[in-house]
Image 1 (spheres, rainbow over the protein chains, first blue to last red):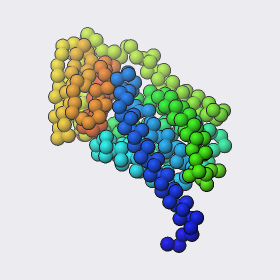
Image 2 (image 1 turned 60 degrees about the vertical axis):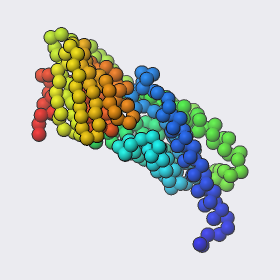
Image 3 (image 1 turned 90 degrees about the vertical axis):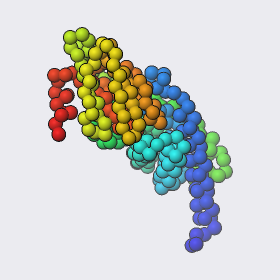
Image 4 (image 1 turned 30 degrees about the horizontal axis):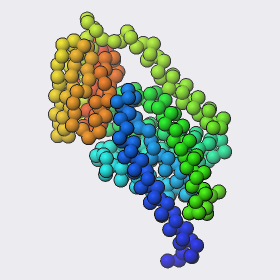
Length: 183
Length: 129
């Protein structure tokens, strides 16, 4: 391998961080599945989006392709543990759209939006992505009936996730593993 | 939070309200009841499956496909998903629906139940092949 010592150590660190983050994201996904949101009278299928905490943190510290890897890993693992093939398809669609939106906002709009704003945008993008996938599969647009409610819940969960990411980033910044990824 | 965050939240809220307000204003007149019976269109995998009348009397509708089964219950001019063997059980969370355009979706089974008024143009879409 043509990697120098420090380069390969950084690549190793990246891999380790992605592995740890996807493990935590899967656990968060399982914890989230135990909370019966629809029983509380909310939109059925609405989720808190805890796993987004890890994805947004990963975008903050690492490169886009590392975060992309995390999104794929987390979605596959969560679907294998909790879901079915069709739910894998929907969550993949939502997660990818949410990742793209958050990545672009972090790279391009970092000056305007804080982490909380980015998280809200990501959560909304996730909802829109899933609704779009669902309406394609069902061959109808009447599912878009739920869009306004999902927009409002997206703001609430986005703010919660955004605050969590802020605390997580400031804590992780003090760990030596993350030192060289700080900007 | 920065100002841009607040702006983003405001824009999304306004968009959500713009969708919600007209629906809220026209909400009650569309409600079913005696005399103006609504129907529910059931679609499976994008294809029309059955159209049922929403009556006050109770009736159960079985939808059995190779993916699994869904049991719908019609009563009091509305309809609800009563039982299903889908893995996520999200369809049960939609509750009892009574108004046109409201839907119950079971994604794993590709089942869609949508309420429409019998004379409305909503229904025509279901029959055009």
